[in-house]
Length: 148
Image 1 (cartoon, rainbow, N blue to C red):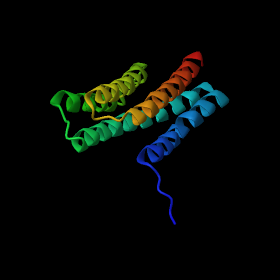
Image 2: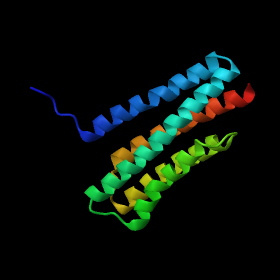
Image 3: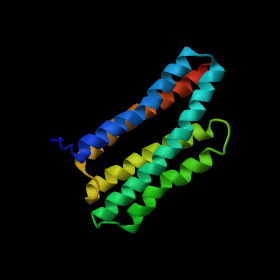
Image 4: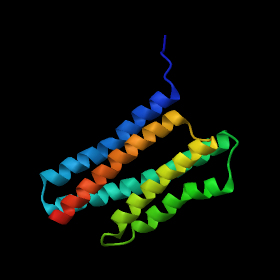
């Protein structure tokens, strides 16, 4: 008989898998030359833009499912995507800072959702940990790129 897996357990496992490219990126950046580290940072910033956009969709879905979709919360959920995608068109250090900012805003939207009742506490704990891990990975690669 098939064993039932809770939605939180499944989300936790899939979220952990989503962190693998960041961990591999840190390894790649530190195991190779500066140019390759810059390439790894670029790849992961594109991936991060996709992730923060996805998070906004998840937030909308949770708000709508909970029948609690305040306009300000729905607007806050799209801000990270509105920051992330233009950031990919920029050069220099701007994409790095903008995408880290977008990640933090997405996390703060989840914190706000927990206070307003549309975001679950268990998922919020996962988001806190994953946000810290992803931010640390991106910062580490950025440091490696700056260090050369």
